[in-house]
Length: 120
Image (cartoon, rainbow, N blue to C red):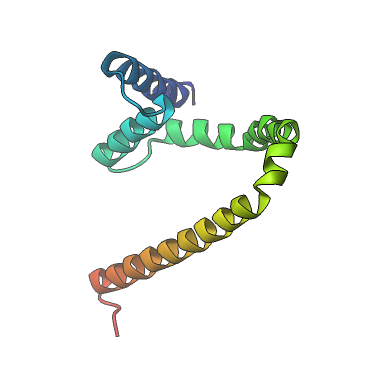
């Protein structure tokens, strides 16, 4: 598990270095996640240490939403002013995400069935 945590932190650190060195307009954690994804694809799977470390971190994910909730309360006036616009954007983005995810799932399931010889 410690090795997995080292891999996760290394990807984030390298992402930070890349963003600072090349002055990229991306958040460094996003670059780190892309590096991690690339490493997982090259490795053709998730090593058990990385899986254990990530599951351990995910159990505390709810704590990361507390600062966001406090930020909502601090900026209540701004949110109330543009509430309808924000609500519309949330509903539309959620609907689009569900449609895209469902479509991708259907394509992947059909592809898997064809590969396994289970198609109709």
